[in-house]
Length: 285
Image (cartoon, rainbow, N blue to C red; front, side, top):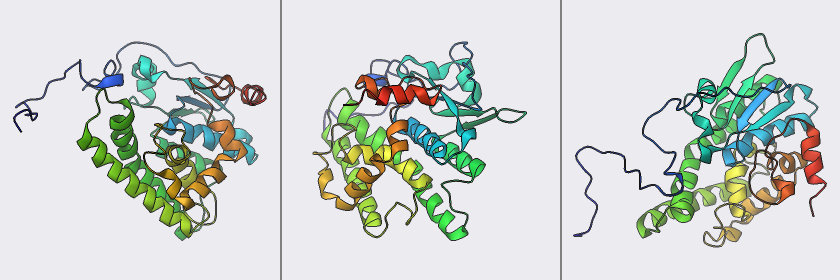
């Protein structure tokens, strides 16, 4: 093809290319400006935004609180990724990778920094002894699916979601390529859930908490406006699971924390006590 893109010998950044995130994406890591992170009153300090990766952690914390784990009380500080808050010196000190979510556990004598959403879920599950089976075989199954999610979600978000919903132009090849993979993943989950109540068996776990914000939101029409395009209704077992998880009270609470869009009742920019969520949910139609 005469108009095909020919990669240069050495790639350089084109600041005009990249769509919605072009203003913040750069090929360098590290802090871009000085700013300390706020610190609230609770043992756990979360710095996040209500994206699928952020929802994983707020749902996890709300599930732990629902289980009676008072030590899971947390402050959820909003990191506006579109504004580049994740590149502050304070945030980079917690997560050198400059991605949300990031957690600081201040319950001990020395603060513990935890980053990467899968690592945070595992850290919290082990800290509180909840939502991760003790039996070795059952635990392994949960971790299998947790790591599956960490490897698969980028194809859904950065792949399908980007080219279908966010790219400045629609191109057939990347949309077809990542739609194929997204549907393969949906089919995989549907087959797994045909034989199991939850993702990793008959018990709700961090595998469900990790996977639902990406794939549950997607098939319920809450992400990328793509449910019809993907024929999401045809994945009956995945639909059953997605609706069941959505109805959990802790999921209802956690999914609205650090959100900046939507109705007033479903966009709690910051959470510093249970009352913040309670007040919002009272406004729910």
